[in-house]
Amino acid sequence: MKKYRVAVIGVAQMHITTIAQSFSKSGRVEWVGCSDLPLPFETIADKPSSKKHLIPQLMQENNIPRFFADWRDLLAEKPDILLLATENTRHAEVAVEALNQGIHVLIEKPFAACYEDAKAMVEAADKSGATLFINWPTGWDPAIRTALRLVREGIIGRPIKFHYRNMESLGPFSYGQGLTPEEMAAEWWYHGEFGGGALLDYICYGCNLSRLFLGKKATSAVALAKNLVSDFAPVEDHVAATLDFGDSIAVLEGTWATFASGCVDTGPVIFGDKGTIVANRLAPEVRIYTERHIKEPSRIVPADPLPEGREDIAPEFFRTIETGLPPFEAFEAHINLEAMSALDAVRRAAGSGKIEELK
Image 1 (cartoon, helix red, strand yellow):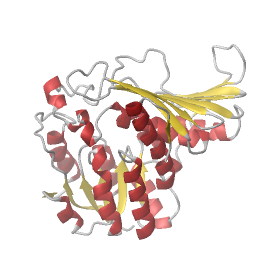
Image 2 (tube, rainbow, N blue to C red; image 1 turned 30 degrees about the horizontal axis):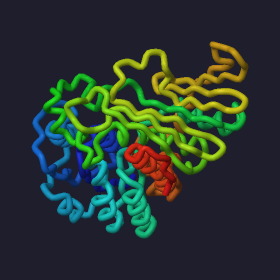
Image 3 (cartoon, one colour; image 1 turned 90 degrees about the vertical axis):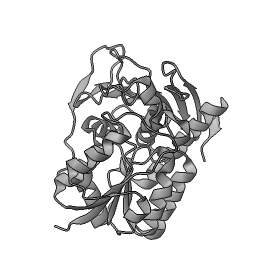
Image 4 (cartoon, rainbow, N blue to C red; image 1 turned 180 degrees about the vertical axis):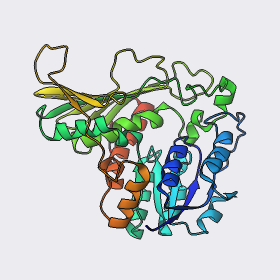
């Protein structure tokens, strides 16, 4: 099987380690090198998930041979594939340059920090013919894919409301990494000018999923953003948003301010005019409620297995570039552009306090 020359630019998003491992495990990769974009302030921590820690971790785990101080020098080596995980506001700068050179690009969520950046990337991909693929952890969840299939089969009638909230979180460094508030404040996640904050980190999931489950582009958004527990940094850590889809709505939450979720499902929860479907990223099943006034589900459907040969990031990406067939739709660029339009409207609405129309 063909091997591909692969490069990594950006270690801002810690998910890059999982993505790189998928490509390494495929046995179809020749690593060219990795690079990162410098920040105008000094990071402090050298602890798990921090930028200082992630570069050597990435290189050691995947036997990446070289670090390039300038990302443009890495692109000059003409890799076939670029794995991109820069700060959210910097995706377009790098991706457009790579796509213009005919390099296939995989971006870790969110797609971008604004609609204009996402549009520029899609246009560059369409013009060059290179693949643009946006990776979402939720796109690999069997229960979510099964719920999508069941909704489309009409088991709950016409979907009228979509609800999603992320799992309990106190921010990106609340999973045992041990960063102090001072150290967290020096990471890009807590700098709005680089796309830090809970809005782009977590509301993006609901925008992507609601586009899939409700089957079309939203029309407008309203949102409220607060800093509830992160007093060491001037970014939002909890966001509530509603998207208008005309004949349906989506209610989304993105939080870095939830100590424990309790018994509240993350979702997605899809309410139809003839029932409700509940998926949960923590359970390999879908619960279906098609009777009134019941506490237990009418049916529990085990999650479908992922398609054979397409169970992981790298093989799905290889299939896309080799066959020209679209990937699973959560990862497809034009669908993501519509979802990004919703995320951009949420961002604007959170700032203006008004209903914002989608672009």
